[in-house]
Length: 436
Image (cartoon, rainbow, N blue to C red; front, top):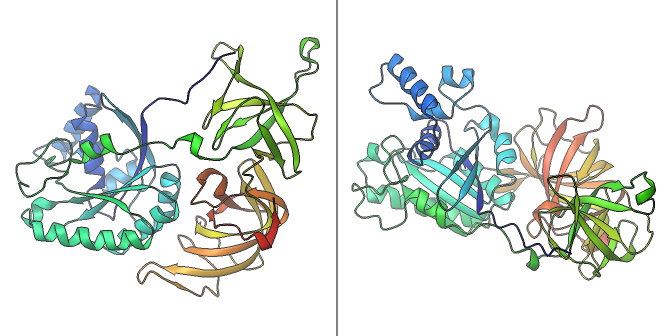
């Protein structure tokens, strides 16, 4: 057998957000340029277009605004994923749009992020869209926030202005349960405090933006979380050599699993033990593991011939979570179709899809006042609110703030399969379902 340690790739997933004209595209372009993550032909193209526009220097925003509509309008309207690396860390950056109409795109970009990089224009300070981005960041459980107070050159590098913005931002962040906030005064246009420290901020003793990205903790120790293994497929080779083989393939959402561990299969409730763990090698062969960690993709073999199908979840017998037909949580509406009470929908949790009824639209979050208000007409596009769903079948669910992967769900149109909303499950109410 082969003993396999957790993946050791030092990778940070981050999402950027900012209001229109905060300079987010320029900041991302500056990060790419100053970390030497730009190909020569890309830089040549940017310099050529910049000259055609009569600019004295390369417009680094062009490195990220790749869509024609974006280039023509000078805005970012879609999520794009950028990749860059340094000597110590690799990065996947979800570059999300700033317009209110595209708040849904931030939900997509931030759903897998460990850090949110939020821009604030030093001239305008915290605005409504900043509040919305903080709300999404908090609701999605993003652990770390870096706020880049941009265009400090346009306010004369005023320390008082910077401190005032940071205080207001941090107070709002705490309202959404975000405690880890690091603020950096920057000028994306000139590169001050982005990668290199600026001489124009002698009053600032904190890290540059890149220094912070290099140092922020990444990942979660799988050993601190309970086992959650959503089954994606049942493996039963139709060959004489493997006639008795039955495995259950999927990706570990959380935790650690070893042969001999006692597990529970939900929703059936069958108790069994792990007989073996297999993982495919790159050459097509299979290796048997002594241990597997999230987020590895593996195939589990179980000691007993129990009924397991796609959509089931193999969980730790001593920490199984909840099996329920009532699901409450916060949703961000991603569709132009209004989400209303009594709507018949589908709900997707991990690899499981079940029919459901929107039992109640509890309320809607008012981004301006940070208060929850009644939503008599339902939740429209980009709205954030709380709902209660009645499910047709039992599902295994966790509190999103504890286990993001098995606490996240999608609300889907029953008729055409369009995604209506992305949801984050609340701490389950055991009176609403069957506690295990």
